[in-house]
Length: 210
Image (cartoon, rainbow, N blue to C red; front, side):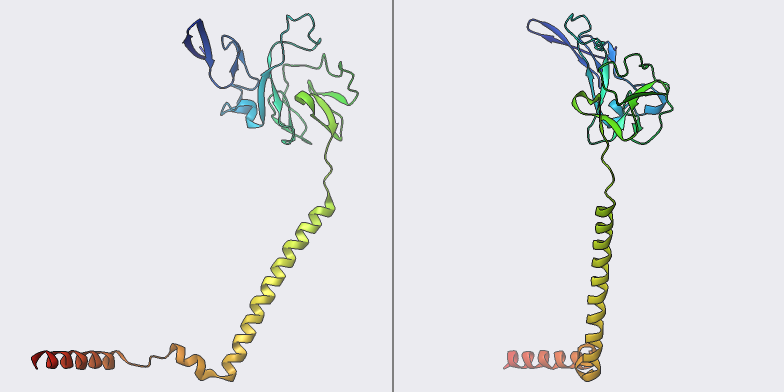
């Protein structure tokens, strides 16, 4: 009930709706249908949903379940069963994954919090597969101050240029006010223009008679 069956030359296949995986669309991506994901976005739009492998494969790692999981984008700074947490945000959701295998891969930076396997402070889940604790990117206060300084400098320069143009224009006006008044003074009134046009029309009519 989570896809459509498409007939092929040598059989058929299922085309699953977004958020469902498997040969028969039998697997649901984490977070689908939960109140935290009311719009049913795949991994909250912060990652991709993949099946982590074949649990029946005898050569598969011990933590392979054959079930779908969310791989949060490495540059999204998100983690959680369906990427529902931002880095630095304490998880409050009691997930179903548990922490039975947290750190079983030998990663000493992994830490179980509120039934979710995350990382110790200063690290976040990323790396290959999105399951490795890697150092979090520190905020570069120097670069922030430089950006603010550039913005302030541009604003100050803009105001200075506009003020300089105003002062220059005012100085020109004071030195030759008639030069500016001519731009805003009509050389002819509307009445004089009408009379001039009427005279030209009379001259044309006179020439036509002759």
